[in-house]
Amino acid sequence: MTSVACLPQDLPDIPDTDIRFDIYTNSRTPGRGRVGDLVPGRLRRHGLFPSGAAWDFMSFAMAVVAADEAVSRGRSPDGWTRKIDLTVAVSDPATWNSEIGRLTQALRFLSGDMWSVHFIAGGGMPFPRNPRLPRPEDMICLLSGGMDSLIGAIDAVCEGHHPLLVSQMAKGDTKDQKIFAMNVAPNSLHLQLNHHARPPCTSERSQRARSIAFLGFGVMAATCLQRHADGATVELRMPENGFISQNVPLTPLRTGSLSTRTTHPYFLRLVQQTLDAVGLRVHIRNPYELQTKGEMLKGCKEQALLAKLVDASTSCGRYSRTGFQHCGRCVPCQVRRGAYLAWGQPDHTLKGYKYEDLGLADARHAAFDDVRSVAIAIETVRSHGIDALIGGSINGQLLGDPTPYRLVVENGIAELEALHKKLGVI
Image 1 (cartoon, rainbow, N blue to C red):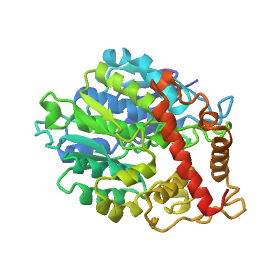
Image 2 (cartoon, rainbow, N blue to C red):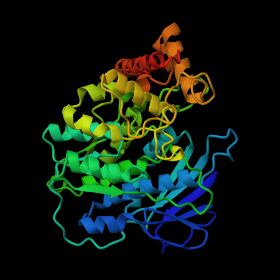
Image 3 (spheres, helix red, strand yellow):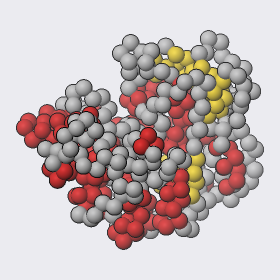
Image 4 (cartoon, rainbow, N blue to C red):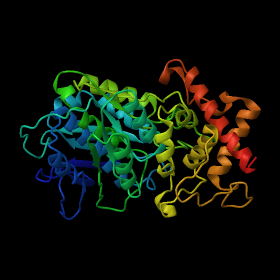
């Protein structure tokens, strides 16, 4: 068990803590990490003052990301599952400690680790709550720089919404986020934030829990709207195609083979129940949970604007490692390429793909692990049906009626199969 504490800089150390993070401050205290240091300044500049409960939830999200970055998987017995004991300082520890059961359940599902969580007093907003006018936008839409969030923002505007766009800044995406926001919703606030987690040790560079920070930023921003101040519930839109959201392992040896589970319907339901329980009037919604990426492209409500912007969107799971060029062979890249094919429009992804021809019979292309895993999944479905691939990963206990979720995975595999056939992989 590794104990991690995420506290304001002036709170004393907790005895027997293995890793300490200072939150919302550019601390340089030896032996401590820091997280969220840029957030207060950016909010002040925009005159944003979220509710106390929303700030506490964002602090929890920051702490989860910090722990995920700091605790090594290499030291765990199976090389994957970690035991993390997390302490977070908030303004209302009694309320949040009453939700520990649901939150730890959500975290265990999200990252595949064993979590225990404790909330203590001493946290809260680190700057004065000066009077400001709440924002006029009527909803929050997350805008990552990816294809799905671009479609989600375009559709929200086409539906008549005035969305406040929230982005989690990432190297290689920040400029495109700004371009997308200016083109899609030029009269809306575009809020760009970053968890900026800096552990006091070698980073695990985990991606499993990173996106919970994005969710925390969205919840926080929702409480800054006039709609929320008036007592109404604010929609927080998290656009993600259902195939990626389901995160079905492509082979028996691949656990969580696609991406983070932050948009999985079960995880979002647990978070929603927590928000409801603490009185946060924020409704998390992913309108694309039953659509593939290709179906999202075809169904986008403003095709001309989509065609203008989509080639600059980012999908690659190895984007920074390939010099900010899509690799073309990781699972998210293959899903992207299959989606273009299903859309029926040419794929002019900016800078192209580093590994373009996946049909080449070498270790960098057809024999690359992600390409082979997709090919195996395609063959499994073709030979034995979709249930042989899904196994127990989609079930009624997690999702209620699993039928529509099975269908979106089946359709997602079909898009990948069409891509593999076109490129000569199978």
